[in-house]
Image (cartoon, rainbow, N blue to C red):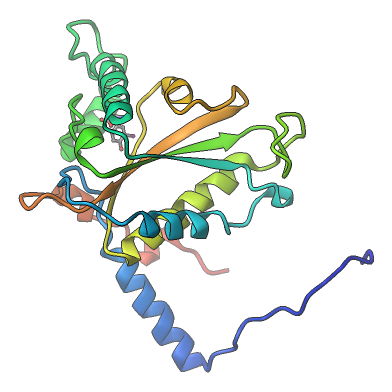
Length: 228
Ligand code: IYR
């Protein structure tokens, strides 16, 4: 291997039974996470959001270029702007504007059991919106010139770590993806080489919050894994 500066790989080795217990307990905890569509306006400390973004920022990435940016919105004006633009797109998506829906019938049928519609009040109610941007270019210097690699994969992993950390802190989340979502670049004042990927809505669930029963149906391990 080429000569590079290295540091010791520091990871405490656990006995197998401890490893199994820890994996099972972490898995059970993560399996409790539910997407929330009914948020209260109860505050969440900024330090929770900072820690979750720091965790996301430690994700593995192509060439370690860390091709992500997290625009954190607490301003009521920005939240309103995002809600208005997102709902305008969603009305077109669902056909709630009186025109033919942009979504196919098959897509709308697939969403049926989730009970979603064009109204997104949570974009104003929840205390935090974290708008995740993927940097198509930028390298570590974020110069907008250098190529980045495996951007979608890297940002996807980072988002997973963000959601997991927020869940560990007892914070409810929703990954919201209005389509198209180019308006987020303007609202968040991000450069044109960045692509908005999703809005992570974070807060406490409303006292009357429910989840669709359909969301609890998860494929069993036997269906999602093969052992060769
Ligand atoms: N963005 C729309 C539609 C939507 C699409 C998928 I795929 C979902 O899993 C959920 C919703 C909305 O937020 O309603």
